[in-house]
Amino acid sequence: MKKKQIITGVAGFVGFSFCKKLLDKNKQVIGIDNLNDYYDVKIKKSRLKILKKNKNFIFLHIDLRKKEILERKLRNYNIQSLFHFAAQAGVRHSLLKPIDYVENNICATFNILEICRIKNIKHLILASTSSVYGFTKKKRVNETLSTDKPLQFYAASKKSCELMAHSYSNIYKMKVSVLRFFTLYGPLGRPDMALFKFTKGILEKKKISLFNYGDHKRDFTYIDDAVNAIELVEKLKFKKKEFYRIFNVGNGRSVHLKKYLKEIEKNLKRKAKIKYLPMQKGDVKNILSDNTKLNRYKEFRKRTHYKIGVKKFIDWYRDYY
Ligand SMILES: NC(=O)c1ccc[n+]([C@@H]2O[C@H](COP(=O)([O-])OP(=O)(O)OC[C@H]3O[C@@H](n4cnc5c(N)ncnc54)[C@H](O)[C@@H]3O)[C@@H](O)[C@H]2O)c1
Image (tube, rainbow, N blue to C red; front, side):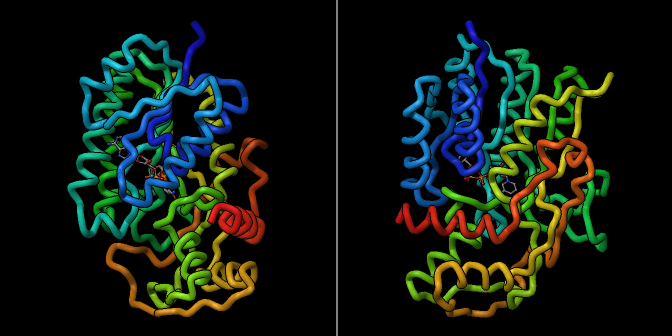
């Protein structure tokens, strides 16, 4: 029987985008998601509808918090790698409902680690976030920087997942690659993120909120580039005696939020109505990825300029809505 790949959070933005790429390459994928309603479930269903057209795709509607069900449903499958993208994401929501992060990030990741151990899965690829870097004076952050002082609970929960994975990799000699993503965006993206909210607000002639009075800089990373990185890392050989490794996945270019907004306005041919707000608790002002580790590989070196990425997103948005 051909080995399958597992993707958790397959109805989410990253899980879907990566799954599509694997299916396009004729791989067999088992996708898992509980379709929670953190944001509009319609977009999750739209993503799934696209994936379900492919005969190599199996969807399991499972909640990762339920370990026994997970174990039972996966019992008969022979698995190659497991891509764990399911999570409770979002910094702002973590200020309101931190328990969601304990359950869907920490507990669910523990269950995934157990599945990897029980099923002897050779490689776990774990999604983490640039938020783990917290506040730093460094212009660019690299993977060796301390991540001991998370500024909010989302970051704390993701860092906890990294730590749990590290201990499992050490004890059970399980291969783990952690990917720290920097603000991803693109078609079928997340409705709770800036590009989506700005585009929607401008088109609906509603006021959009600019935290920190718009004086943020972000490393906006186009989804196709992140998907290339995931594909690359899965194939990259581990060094001798290496079981755990971390990679930044960013664009490597810092874009001011106001410049990003200008690009959206230009594409929509409309001006935004802006409500300026102070810095949101737990946010960082600027963050920029040091991509030295993945830049060694040509598959990751060519990345999408934000002006091209924003245009592709808006073309998709107009078409979808
Ligand atoms: N999108 C970004 O900018 C970004 C940046 C940094 C890190 N990340 C990380 O990348 C990963 C994917 O993010 P995303 O943007 O695709 O988020 P997303 O919210 O679009 O996708 C996550 C998916 O996981 C599912 N899920 C959540 N809890 C679950 C549970 N208990 N059982 C089963 N399914 C569950 C959700 O229903 C959702 O479809 C996450 O781990 C996130 O922390 C994303």
